[in-house]
Amino acid sequence: MNTPRTAEVMTDHPVIHLDRVGMTYSSRKETNEVLRDCSLSVRSGEFVSIVGQSGGGKTTLLRIVSGLLESTAGTVNLNGQNIDKSLSDLSMVFQKPVLLPWRNIEDNVLLPMEFRGRVTEDMRTYAKELLEMAGLTHAAKRNPYELSGGMQQRVAICRALVSRPSIMLMDEPFGALDAMTRDTMNIELQRIWAETKRSILFVTHSIPEAVFLSDRVVVIGDRPGRVIADITIDLPRLRTKAHRYTPEFYEYETQISELIGAKESIA
Ligand SMILES: Nc1ncnc2c1ncn2[C@@H]1O[C@H](COP(=O)(O)OP(=O)(O)O)[C@@H](O)[C@H]1O
Ligand SMILES: [Mg+2]
Image (tube, rainbow, N blue to C red; front, side, top):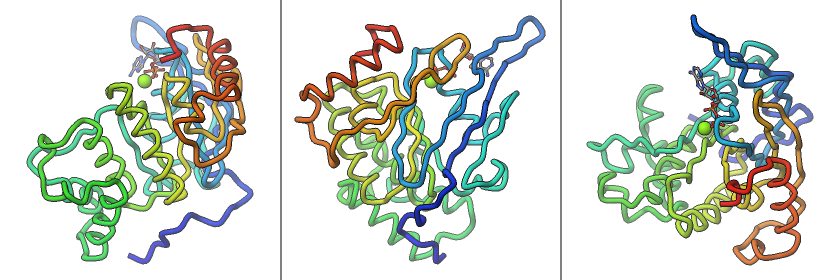
């Protein structure tokens, strides 16, 4: 496969574009309007986070972008195309790494390629490069249970990158990690993003995590979920841990937590 490794050239149309997306879950007993009139865009190479209260519809929104779920209103375009045509150019990282326990790390990373057909030597080389970038070369032949939670989540990120998607969707990928591991993973992810130039749509309920990682933070208000703010994070790259303690960082945190209206969200 000769897919280019570098990011797509900057284009005018956004790689992800949601126009007035709405979602109402219906059962025989009741209807539940979870999202209403959600519009947002992610440009090529941009890192955008979605924050909001638990139960506010963030996972639902990401599932709609991924094509796993069909919205009940509005439209979703990926790379300027309607959603069903562009699925192969997208990958998803979930809260739990979901690795196959009986396969070693390298073979777990290669799984998406195996689903698509044969695994070539080129693909295996690329998987090794990704593992190296994630600091996991020494673990390539180990099994998942031998790795810590943070390492397993890095494997899941490598697996999401192996098909060279232009878009990565991440649903609270570090939510299950302790605070220190999470901070380290934030720095790792920023580096991986900067090196691979993917467009990332990242869901979190941690405001500091969103501010640290993002070019923009989209705030979803709840019941029903609507986009209530879209904030550009104008902090220099690459960000370090020290940035978290600057007045600018704190201002963004305060602004966003006031919008969400939840003290618990400052994790
Ligand atoms: N498959 C489903 N069927 C019915 N209701 C659902 C389904 N998935 C989620 N919901 C409801 O939608 C709301 C938003 O859920 P979710 O998108 O998971 O929010 P978040 O990720 O922000 O916590 C919740 O009230 C949840 O109960
Ligand atoms: Mg969720």
